[in-house]
Length: 317
Image (cartoon, rainbow, N blue to C red):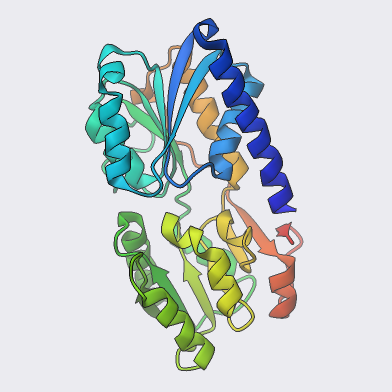
């Protein structure tokens, strides 16, 4: 169901991009859209919501393929357009891309971020209710305590493996917060550093399969690299250990549960913020938005682990 729904959203989004490009000079505004790992569901929902809002904006879409240097090159190539104010707003996906973007743009153009776990800790905004800088957007930063309070409705937690990507500031910060939560609640937290260009993830999964690494659950927070590995992790150990994720991207790949805003809601909320900016609102005064978190559960994973799904949960296949 998720794959079919995402495919539909992508088609609508791409149709919108094509329409915007064809209209060219007919558009009153122009948005530079900086993707981090291809057209994800929040990105597609952003474009689709702009179309629904009838925002008269031409959209330039560039992908960084999870590479800071590629993103920096994109920005350098567009430096003349940025300097001359040809873009009315910039959309950026994730903490890393937004930090690179804001460091380059330096307040010249409003930046609307999406899927940033903690914009204050990342030094993107001064405060959630009043950013201060020419940047605002949408966070998926559901407090760790809220996430695990929700997860404990599904299963007891006395021990937990936590995967984190040491190359991502968000991932490191989340791992630290989970460790603090575990210490306060008597839960043994077993951290595993599993960054890209390293065999660490495969080695950790082999430990779990061999039974030498055991816990009552495995958790990964909001992190682009781990999100791209969600399907492989599920295929390797999803039948052996309950998998808990910090975003809906994980349950879309068969993980047991996530407690977070839905990906579609995040994209739509970012478009609403961008639309307000295009209509004259000052990004410096627009509060960062956290869409309503929801418990999302995979029916198949719940059946494997014999877990009763709460009646108020959103279900994935």
